[in-house]
Length: 139
Image 1 (cartoon, helix red, strand yellow):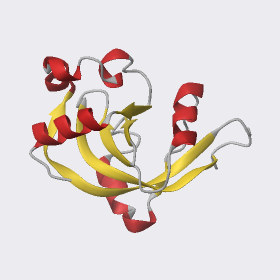
Image 2 (cartoon, rainbow, N blue to C red):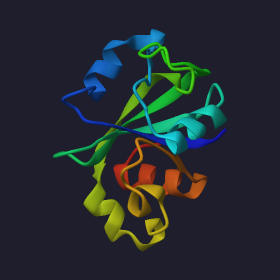
Image 3 (tube, rainbow, N blue to C red):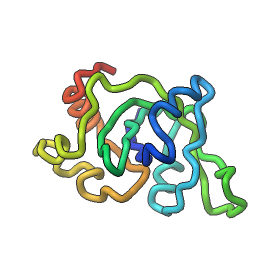
């Protein structure tokens, strides 16, 4: 299993909207960055990810699971763009803010800290465990 981070502006797509999709999940569509697209192409069913609210909130708020591997993005006819489907697994007991992540020296090399603009990013297993611990969540 691999770990990822999915960033979304809550005004565009929020954790609550993701949860409302239930087990059917939702396409993580609209990604128009080659590196983020390539990360989605690496994903496998069962991979886990953090759901991150960007903009004002700037915090990891939940855990999602990849339920459908990379396929054509239904929001465009351009064959260059793929997406995955994800479903909500559980909210974090305590959201972990970007400020908290940046303050933790063990997370200094995390993609979210180094290249925060990417909407889809890898998360190492160590980073995953640290953030879960910070959130008071076991998964």
